[in-house]
Length: 183
Image 1 (cartoon, rainbow, N blue to C red):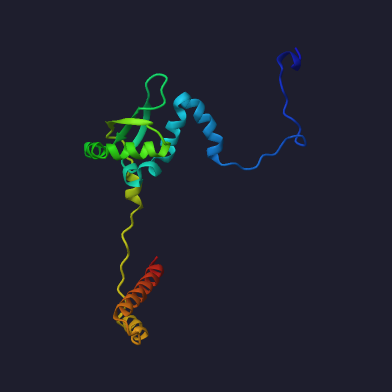
Image 2 (cartoon, rainbow, N blue to C red):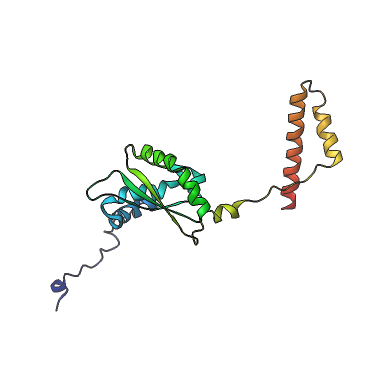
């Protein structure tokens, strides 16, 4: 048995290989996901990847688009299936349904979606990452010497409003410097 019988292709020698530039991951994955999602995939991919841009970060923080159902042969008047972590969020989505539909349809430029079905999923933890990002501001008071120094720099300013703003700015700068030293 020879290689020709099995139609085995050997890799080209290094000198004959074409080099490729680095490409964005989205360019590589998008064609694959389009095949996975099938005919209605474009819209679902767009909604999944741009959900926060379509409805805004606030709604995107506690809702996740699962799928869109269309009647056979149609590409409009679909039903968007959303997952939310609890009943409170489901109620909020219900109240904002018209807003969500308007935003989606404006994004696509036609009546792509006309209804929303809400599914509660207690294990869904969409806003957990946002909660962990918050770090309370560090507070340090300026020392009396620093406060006197800031006030002495601003004492020649005639506008009381401008003087107040510049004094607060000076205190903020000293606070930032103290916080950087303590980190």
